[in-house]
Length: 290
Image 1 (cartoon, rainbow, N blue to C red):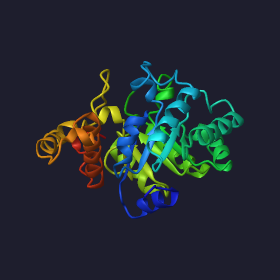
Image 2: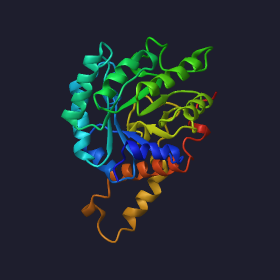
Image 3: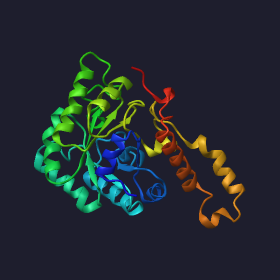
């Protein structure tokens, strides 16, 4: 069943963990479409892992629309969030609404995500009023990481945790339907999660949030340049099952295309889903400390 805003809200109220992964192309989207994954984010991280940029800043609207359209074709029954790239929403409300509308009309995204808290409430409110659901993103915000001191855990320094908490409240008040916390101390993330009525998803924000996001290329160990502390590669967990399925298949696994990276990736994603639902991911190994 395709998730919607009502079912996501119910998941929070029932303490059912939400699973979220990034994706950037048709083939991986097809694999994700065969799992019980709740959400797909077509992230601007695709600029790094798929397009080879050194960070997310250069990614354009046209590139994001191309990636999102490909994912939608591969996963027509998944709830897809399009990530608004740097420069597509910060300047004024009209630009923000216009570009959010492009995600919905040109790539069939179900919602958009944008970075920023208190400073972005007007943008969030304007997009929401246009009828497009918005996912907020606070804590470590990669598009502005240079201005905020680089890629680091956010919320440990004096006064910083309170500012992040205020960002979370502001995002909710502006009308966002969910918020992503990135690279936060677990206790701060837990406080925010219990204080908000909208779903709170985490990436590197510890175990006490309403759901977990990972970069697909980190989960699969595909990106060679960097892997953050919180990103577990799930391939080792499923190698034995993958090899057994090939060895014990009653027919040639090649006829069902179960002998390659696609099936191995699907099994790894299923392992992530189970670990998230059972709250064994992230364990202490994949958490920042307070």
